[in-house]
Structures are given as structure tokens and as C-alpha cells.
Image (tube, rainbow, N blue to C red; front, top):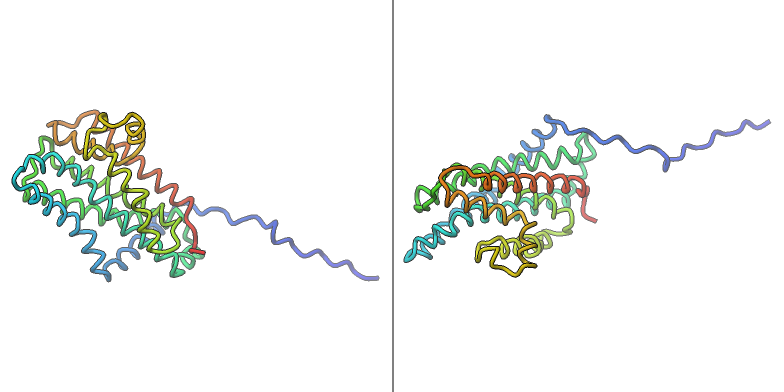
Length: 266
């Protein structure tokens, strides 16, 4: 009599491994690794730290004959420049991790997507603090940017903008197949916000349809927050609203980045 053979287990019905919760130790280890890698790339460090300062310096002396113009737009650009540079560097750096296979090896270890995204955000957030402090200090104490409110509030909005740029860079890197494609996302993600944020004309002077679009773009609230510091001595309710919206958008985009993160580019 032949003994019946037990059916082979169906691999397709094997339950997936449970999602690993966010861990502080894994997040800080990821951030430390990213910072260590960046320390060996002086060109990237120079791009992050110096380009916003250089752009502000050039802008100040472009309007050398009308310093009031620099006062009107300098505060807004103080938040926009860090956002753009952090977006570019973060999107390319994350994509490089994926295309090189590093991301696939990391996610095969006890490291969840949330740990990876949070680690990158922490590492680039630390750089954003230094970047924002340099740009704000240069604009206010060296280039003579005239602000009515506290320079520390300018620094806060500049830092939130840089973190938003980091979050956007992490998010769009999931949809790019090459570093060139990551750069191509800049016209789609950054330029519309730049045109509609109120930098060139007040948003309420725009066509109603464009004004409605600008109301849902985070850069609009970054510019509004900078203008509140420019015009008011104290922290206003509008400033608090604008800062919370920028911070909330950054957290939302980071969560979307963790949800859409791929192990590697196909």
C-alpha cells in the first residue's frame, strides 16, 4: 500500500512578513550612514551649503540700485532656494541608492521603508539646519535684508522649506528610472509652485483658477509665512497657520514617499 504523499506547501498562500514598525535605532543608523557617505562627496556638500548663499548674494547686488526690491523678494527667495537645492540633491541621492542595488540590500535587512525614509529625512534635515542658518545669517546680517519680525522666524520657515524639498525629492525619486529623469521632475514639481507662489505678483491678482491652484501648493504658504515675518513684529496667527501647513505637507509627502518606495529601478 502506497503511503500518500503530503502536498507541498503552497508558497503563494504564505502570508507576507509583517510590516516592521519604525525604529529609532534603525532610523538613526540610516541617517548616520547617509551623512557618512555625503562627507566623502564635497561637491554635494558645496551645492547644499553654498548655492543658496551665492544666489542670495547675486540677487542682492543685481538690485544694488534699488535695495528695497531685495527687501521685498529676498525673504521669499530665502525659503525657495533651500527647497530647490534639497529637492535636487535628495531625489538624485535616493535614486542612486536604488539603481546601485544598495536599497535592495538594505531592505533585505531588518530595515523597513519607514526607517529608510525617516533616516534620509533626518540626515538631510540636519544638513537643512546648517544650510538655512547660513543663508538666513548671510541675508540678514551681511546683505542687510530688512525684516520687521524676528530673524529666527525666517530661519524656521527656511528650515521647513528645506525639509519640504527633502520630502518632495524622496517622493519623486520613486518614479524616476535615472538621475536625468529625477532632474526632469523639477519643471513638473517645482516650477509651477515657483510661478504661482506669489513671488512675482500677489496671488489674489491672478486669474481665479490659478489662485485656486496656488491655494493647494505648499510653496505658496512658505512665501506667505516669509512675508508675515517681513511685515509684522510679532508672530501672527497667519504665520502659525502657514508654518503648520508647510510642516504638514512635508510630513504627508514623507508618508507618501514611504508608501511608494521601490527596492530598485526596473
